[in-house]
Image 1: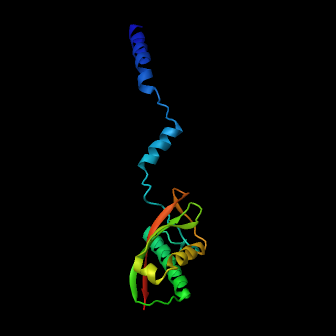
Image 2: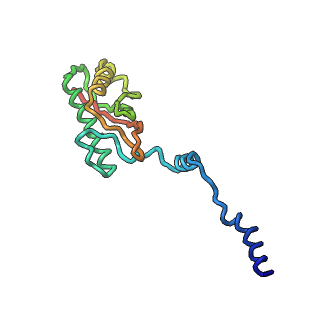
Image 3: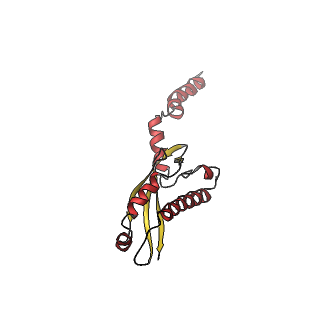
Length: 158
């Protein structure tokens, strides 16, 4: 009998400590998970219709970049600008794709020589962005997110 009481005594004293479950709120889990995510990388890059099937991230990123660049070059070439001096320069366009797939120019780095020779270049680039075909936004864990790209655009004219 003493043995049974002794076992029950130890069981009641220690059972609460060993079997007590810690409750964790969903906010704590989300907070911990958010700290661990690398928000600088996306699971799926923004894409045009023809790039959506690419699963490998480098190929998807390359496809998107190439399509944007070729679209810009085609639009700029259609303007057929006339210059008085030859130009061989690279301008940088910082392109932002919203979580809804809407493209916008964040900023541009354009040399003053290019602006002097092609005063409408900034407007042409804005028009090109505004008329891009439908873009599917980037996603992180299935959630659409904003992305930004630095796009080099080579300007050559004689």
